[in-house]
Length: 317
Length: 271
Image (cartoon, rainbow over all chains, first blue to last red; front, top):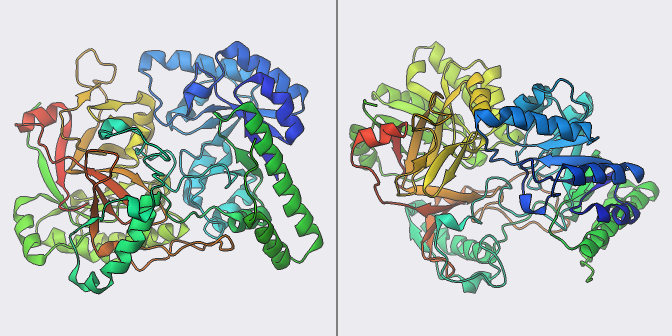
């Protein structure tokens, strides 16, 4: 398994390579990506980044994965030009989400780079995977809300069609709400009474008691005897913003054993030192998984990995 | 822009007294059934339900959610059931639509060669539109063409209680000639959704690698309203989805809606 890391400044590349990154990805201001504020400022910076990454022996992806890919027909030609320019600069892969991207890429005379499907275009089943593979996708970045068991058929398809798979490291990324379809962070739909402290709308972190008792509507009489338990569970989960997380040490090991190809870290707004630290932690985790798998029977390797990783705490800077 | 605006009622996923269903059917052209947010609520019983509503003279739209392999299996059984009823003459193709929220559902519909019209659901429409608090905007012509090629020309959204500014209405808009129509749900807008439910999913320990979302369909018990201390509006939650309620009516005539290409309204009695 290889490590893919984000970066926002070409100066971070050498240290990320040293920390253990095998591939890198970034955005560029001229092309719409998720989190545009953490993108490289221009095509020149992208060219510099490509050269630096390749000098370190690393491949580099460009995120053009804005779901809300907004442009009018008059801008289509310039979008194609910009994509062609990025391709010409030596970008190895493009990360895409919006379906319009496939049409734009088809208008390039020649596309050298490969296409990866962003986790913002959620792929939870083999039919969706096949749909995008037929459009030219060579790697699928899986959503963190998918379990290894549920992904079995999808993995079999990818193996058969030689398609790579990638997933975010469960320790550094993964809201329980669906990535790319969540509007909890859009206060335009609601009016805030105060600035959030100690959490965000999707992770209020106020505990079960921090939220007023919920009101019940449309109660089915048959469920009335069990309502108390349901309210308790709801209050705990909604107050903390933490419905059960599918992505954990166990699911990671099962994905690892099942042949997941790439492990991703993507908090572009993290300070540089934090990025290096996290990539080192990813390398340590992969080394541990490899080592246990090499010397122990599968079930024991899994048990020991989970035991070890359950005690893992993010090191402070 | 003239013509009638159709009216629908969404019955799937909530408990609705039979007496009120009968009353509702008198007032609505369309009945929306199925499951929009969770594959665990999707089963082949919707086929007979669809045929039953058509027998009562209603048009039917079947809502489908985001799918894992389990959902693909359920939906595959549903599609086969619908085709069987259609072949038996019990289901009219021109009075049944299917709303998809997953590219897998779109692929499955193509594979099964369904004779029914497909719509982009509220979670899927964002591939071609952006819905803001005060606006609906076409993102680009290419996404519309991409989905039109695959049979989609109707897009579903929620009302936000205000008249939306649209970027496809004025004569000088680059999108004015695009062909599509819109369905507007009211009064609940889905704000976010999760696969792991807020009421029905057991805790996952670090040693657990789960097989799927296991539940007893606790979401059927009730919906909740929450006075979130950080925001002024009340939130509503059912199962795995958080909603905001916008009960305000922003139009006074059907023409106002049709100008915005909204030719169908769907009332959701509950979140």
